[in-house]
Image 1 (cartoon, rainbow, N blue to C red):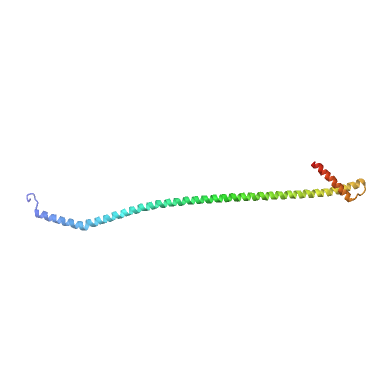
Image 2 (image 1 turned 90 degrees about the vertical axis):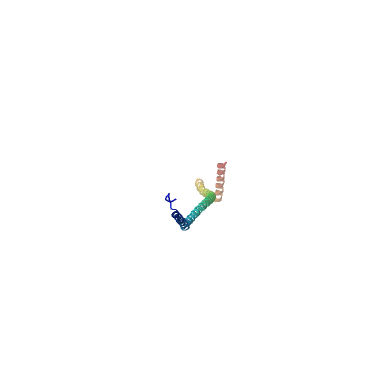
Length: 166
């Protein structure tokens, strides 16, 4: 082997040195490096699972929030409906009250008109009676008894009203 230029004892020494160096590097460099890589891989895996879990929690939270929003919308709509119903009932009761007040006012007005009409007719009768007495006194130039005149006037007015109605 010497002819090939290979020195066997030197080759064995190189191989032993290389194996020792390889064992030292394996022990002090490769193992810690691989352990660090494994740890980093585990941390990355944990981070990915945590991210996935957070995504799932966010999705479930989003669904819960949407359900709460929908429930709040339904509750708001229900409250609006109740408010509309209460408003409608209030409006109807106020309209009924206003109608009753208007009817009562109209009834009072009719009663007042009737009273004033009756009073005007009574006043007219009294004035007409006095006028008739005065006219009769002038016509016949003598004074008649007041009771007889009032009876005569009442009789004439009643005949006039019955003719007007009839």
